[in-house]
Amino acid sequence: MNIGIIGAGNVGGSLGRRWARGGHTVLFGVRNTMTDKVRELLDSAGPNARAECIEDLVRKVDVVVLAVPYSTLRAVVSSLGPMRNAILVDASNPIAPVMRLAVGHSTSGAEQLSNWLPGTPIVKAFNTTGYENLADADFGNERPTMFICGDDSKANGIVAVLANDLGFDPVITGPLIHARYLEPMAMLWIDMAMKQGMGRDIAFRLIKKSSNEFVV
Image (tube, rainbow, N blue to C red; front, side, top):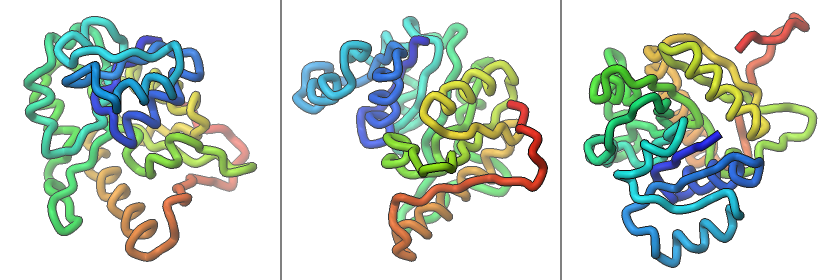
């Protein structure tokens, strides 16, 4: 699959390296393709990765992952060309200063994206755990859960496959409105990992007594 990732920081870099090493073609959308940081990222990701100008990215991929700070989302979206048939995955969290949600209750960051890009399939995913777990989801005999939501069932299924490729157990929770729950879940993870001192090597796991598999 051709995957575009906008953002070359911890989250975007971790996702891109894993997918590229797993055989996907990964294009990192960056402002400047020639910086030392970008070259180091490409070297670590391997031959399936390359850098691309953000404006050209969406024409060349099947999936675009937004891995940028929430405060920059509107500007990034404005710089994108026509999305065509690409799926947009929102891995960001609407975090405001002093560690609180910037939006909530009646909307979510992912729903705002949907309003800015009408007609584009928006999927919320990869936001409820730390970048270390995106880089390495090995928890021994347990697979951490990756919660996914969106209004387009086909797009949800594609993102679930990508989550599985990373070693997560993908669970599609329902429509995009569920981002109102997943974004606060990210705040819970941050609070437990950082403020409570549990460490960043923790992850959420959904379990049930029945042996039936989840259908994604």
